[in-house]
Length: 163
Image 1 (cartoon, helix red, strand yellow):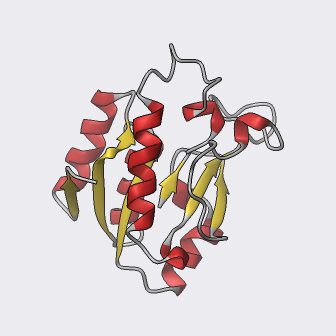
Image 2: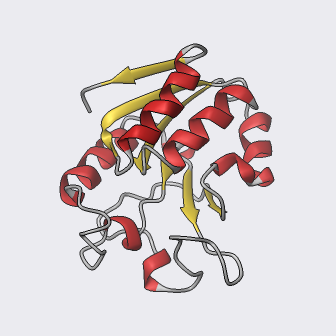
């Protein structure tokens, strides 16, 4: 599952004071993980602001909401969310359940927000095993990321450190 790999978060015009990670390296690593799977096994999730509120999420139809240039988009399994947890989108939750998915690798941004909250929900609500590919996760909020991981470490989490 590829989370929030959008221009607002990893594009060349992003606010680098808010999103200071090495975006080129992150995109390269995420693409390597995408290549490791059959195209139909890859799921993409975009953050989209709903209404006037929505925090640091891009507005639908803007260039900020587009996938970052150079991201490999290999399937039509593209979902939107307006909360950090990707499984807050019931259609995505049902898609994963209907396909009988038991294990989910999470890549993208942010390890302390969307990636972390999606992992917690995946283990608690969908009973999935989670794999984190550390070099393919951009993390701004390291403390929040650690709290999420501690919460799921007791259940079903694996980290890998090579792409």
